[in-house]
Every structure is written in structure tokens, then in C-alpha cells.
Image 1 (cartoon, helix red, strand yellow):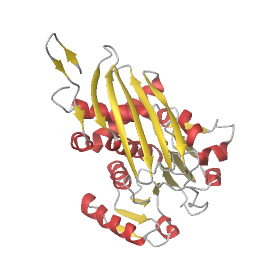
Image 2: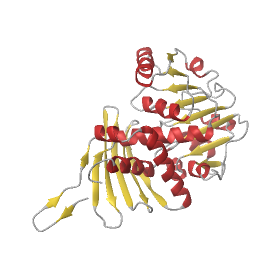
Image 3: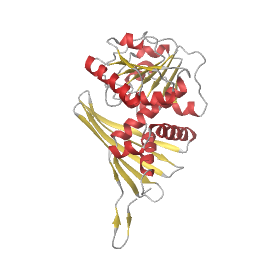
Image 4: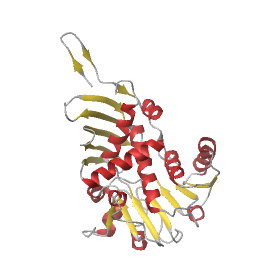
Length: 316
């Protein structure tokens, strides 16, 4: 925190993305994000809703945040994402004193938060014995997405698909090298998905490319890319086959999820939240045809990850 005396000011610490990665193990992040999502459902934490502006189909500026009454911390994250690059900044505050605790680069914060949310959704919504994962998309979010699913399910093999052969083959090699999981790159999306009990889609697709009817009976789908109102990854009618559709935040999903907006229109009464699942108010059906999790970004998750990074330092 910034502290001042007559002759000295101690600045709040600055954390780089690498600092965050070094200080926040994914397993701890999953539990911390789950805890703060449950707090929101109980009313002891509040998300600051996302606000955004877009320009051209693939560029946007975002802002969101969260307040945790139990820890007395507030976070604000802002970022800009374009086809040529992205940058993000997070500020962590003490809600009682109003002081700045830390500032940090927040690309890693967002990647860890997004992976953690997928891990939590997979733990709550997929078959407990699911042992294969298909990852669709091989960008900068993908490796942590695989790691998060492997942290909550006994994954024995990873299937990989993306449009470019060199990308999917290189990513399969990365999964084997970094995570120690056998991985296979597939030339066709349908082949990669066939029979898979867990599928994670994390892309920046502008138009839906994931069709209805290719998921295995009982599969769980994490759809965590396409968080701009003009973008979509899966065909909206896929949701007709879902026995349980869950979001990280209803308020943000109703603003930015093109797939859910197109399918649910004005009636979102059947859409549940991850917080409801964590409190036991909603449970996975015994034998679902399909379960779907749509993540669009929850500022409370950023707060949880940032707090872990801050607490790992000698200044906490």
C-alpha cells in the first residue's frame, strides 16, 4: 500500500505478468476463484459489471472489477485487445483505507482467471470420470485451459484442433512437453470432437464454426472465447440440446454473448450461474445429453488472482 510520512513515501508495488505467473499456481487460483464466485452468490462479494467499446470487428477496450467484503479488497482491470496485440492493467485497492495496494500487468491475471473458471465449470458440470479433452483453438489462452481441465479431471489424452495444421501440431507438442499429457492433432474438427467427454473452445472467431450435432452424448462444452457482441464460436441452436447451460455472470453474458443472446432472446430463465452450482442450488443432471458453460469474463475472478499474486510478495 502507498504509505506516507513527513519525509518518505513508499509506493505500491508493481507486478509484471511474469511476477504473476511465478506467484500464482493454477491449483490455488482455481480454489481462490471458486471461493470468490461463491461469495458473490452469497452476497459477500460484488462484481463490477463489464463496460466496453469496440472498433472494427476484432478490437475492443474493456473495463471490469470486483469488491470482496470479506477481505476488504477492490480491483479494477482495464485492457485493450486488437488483432495486433493486447495489453491489460489491474489496480488492487484496500476498501477500508482507500489505499492502493498494488498495480500489475494483467494479461497473465486474465489468462489464469479464465482458465480457473473453466476448471471450476468442468469440475461441476462434466462427468467425474471424463478422461479426454478436446481443445479447439491454440492461441495464448489454450495451454492454461488444458492445464485447468487436467487439474480437475483425470485427463489421459488431449485432442487438438485449429484451422492451421502447423499451429495444431506445434500445440500438441507443447502440451506433451509442458504438461506431460499425450496429445494428438486432428485435421478435422469433427474427428477431434468425436466421442470426447470434455470440449473446450477458446478462439476469437467472428462467426460460428462449431456446428450442432458433433458433440458426444453426455459431453461438456466450455465456450470461453468470442467475448465480443459481434463474435460467436458455436451455432446458437446447439443450446437446444443442452440440459444445463451455465454462465460466469448473467449480467455480462447478456451484454456480450452473441450465441446466448441469439438463442435465449428475452427469456434467460433457464440459464444458471456458476455461483448457484457452487452453493448447491443447481446440480449436474444425472445423465445429461449436453452441458454448456459460457464464460465471458468476471472481474471477481481477476480480483482473486491478483490478491494471490499480491499476498505472495513480501509487502503483503
